[in-house]
Length: 233
Image (cartoon, rainbow, N blue to C red; front, side, top):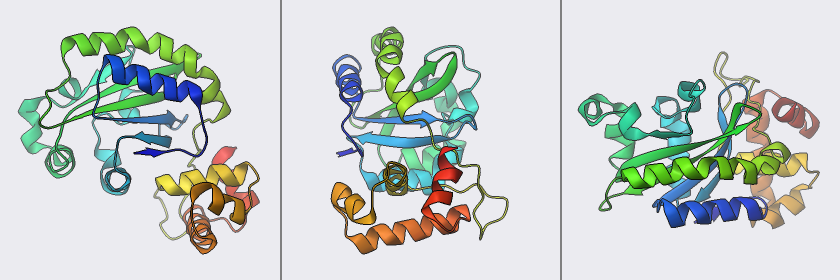
């Protein structure tokens, strides 16, 4: 299952390369902002309902959340390294999210731009497959510098969303956009009308309008211009 807002040959090639050498069951590419929050998710083989559950309930519990590895010097992180099996019986993230979705292993491949972690691939394995092998982890480490070079232009062209604004109806809590809302926000920034967005994403125009109004409430803005300012400046 693929969910993107535009064709990106470099990203497609990177995902295909990881599929060949690391063989994940699903891949998620995302960007990381200066606030250490992930955004701009691109899903490859992952059900959107699972991703939506992750964003709504479990993102901040993720032991591989960007805020936990911002000082990481290496290029690859593994679930075993951040959440050893001996601790999983006590982990809400494992017991209520990963395990029910049959995820048995996760690997993050970090991408740097000018020394800062600007994006990453999250690679997942599902039962009954085996966890990632040491050889596959080494392959990911070897590929990381090549992926950085290939995706530098993409990371700079589509930087992470800035979710600094607060939800108007939830003071003190950072606004969090769904995957679909992020898609629409980027198309709004690109100057597309509601009609064009609906056509691009195969949605009804009223659905696009509903998403926009929900984003306005989350971010405490009242126009498309303010929305762009809140997310992209």
